[in-house]
Image (cartoon, rainbow, N blue to C red; front, side):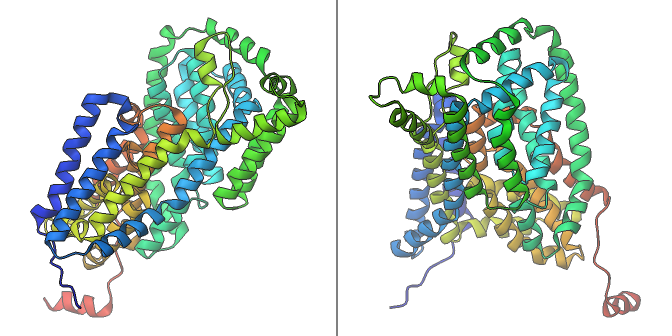
Length: 490
């Protein structure tokens, strides 16, 4: 039997979105930072249920909606596995003293007056080398948050600097998956896309660094430098500190530079961290395994638990205890919960045609190159909000707008740059997006708190829109002979 379905009206497509916005706003108002630990997930599921009820009215069957949800969640499975593996990596790297070693040397080298700017530049270089904003945030970013804690500097500004640098390096790296995805969707080639992206990325990074320098100089008088020495002494008392502790970090970077897949690379990094803990943090591991009857078995159990549940290492202060404890796959379960519920909502919206209806409505407002680029930027941002996934925020708008860019005679690189400047860049600003949730899980700073200081993420889409309206560096397709003759005739 053939089932006839109707396309949703604009009102029907908007109702679930408006309901979600209202519930998420209420969630943040009522629960604050704890809104991501359950309330937001409930809001996403209720919004998905509202969209499903509307879909039933339009003739959709539950079987097709359920298949769409399953397919939608499967899109995020790769990200979910990476998030779980990063939890294990953080657990063993804390136990092995790798993260504390990075914090220790960071405390020696960094000054509060230029700390924020240096954090941005360091993360940019690392992410450019390995092509991953996520790995950069989970390693160097975590260490820089620790250094900022020791200097009593703003964690929100530090997280903004980390995310800004990480996303610049990610976008400029040919090793990045989204940097490869955007030109593929737009119909152009990788290195041409990177060169064109640099026209907005480098000015945005330069302005960001200047702003971080200003914030750093303003914070100098408030920074408590006396706490640095005390923190270093505390770390030395707990861990075996030395440059050899950074070898697992180099191993992970080498795997990334060699273009090895992220998931097995992070697994190798986590396992090497566990080995380093057994080799170089024997006293600490032995103290944690003291209650086990056999020391070797107990030591292996401590490493095993670090991979699964993280570590709890006691220091003299609660602040340092919190800094050197945590990690494990278990610590990422809430993030996975958030991703699954967000992808469920996005999948229902896409399967029932509501998302496509909203995007097509936007195209009717396009009158010029500036308005087309602006529409793309806000559509990608909206897709990040709705689907909670940067890949969908690149692929869906890319498919929808590709023909419109061609109709206006624009080079595909204009579309690919716009997709990256909004679909990828804005994802880390949204708390329930996979990227925003990930950054929160590893940096411990809520996305809405670091968003005002994530200057690069705010400047890139702004410059992209400004360039389009000013017709600055907007590449056009070469006219064919037929087009030239038509123009001459008219």
